[in-house]
Length: 313
Image (cartoon, rainbow, N blue to C red; front, top):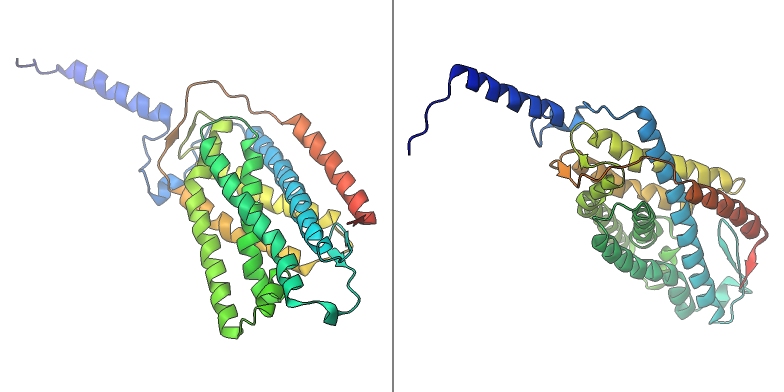
């Protein structure tokens, strides 16, 4: 059956509706997967909302670090106790009370200094599986999973990379395995490539964390969200932890923190160019997670006091 052609008035009205729809969606002048689309900022969300996003993410970053510290450092200390080596855990390092450096055996070094990274690898697998399972859940606890997953990545792949360069941490294991300079260079390159590749792998999954605060992620809020959720909290969180650990400056740990940027760069760059994400129509309330913020502050103070004195294992 032939349809009657639209009148001029109907054509104008139809065009008006399309334009109005595109304007409301914020995509009238944008092109998907285009640089101008990724960097545009037509967002009407107030700046205060992004400040709240940053505050929440900073404190979940710190909480994730503290939890990973407790898990990996105590696991390492327990591993040392299995060889009858007393240890004392400080907020900046572990002291091993072995009489002389010559008393260390290859088995002890390999077992003790690989414990933390191996525990982190197991946590990485568990946390990655958990995050994939809850990727669509709008609960804010997913932020804790994200940062713990990033710290687990750094504590395994990052420690291999940094250890091979600085000959500390997992670097002792590499040294006792008699891996020569060529092998160290290969390990360093593989560590660098692995961290960057994991960042690319995580990017789209981590962009789904926008559904904690928004009903969709598009060109209008994508850039500010990435900056507020990942980049700024990373630098602020590192600065806070650095200040808490003064006057001790642990170059190895600082280098580990620095290796996380190798993950965040591809997460952010790929995140800028992903297609628009639409979640659901349930109303969101962007607010500070007061209980988690206060709890993290108290835990951080306790961490500095208790591990400033030292914990014997």
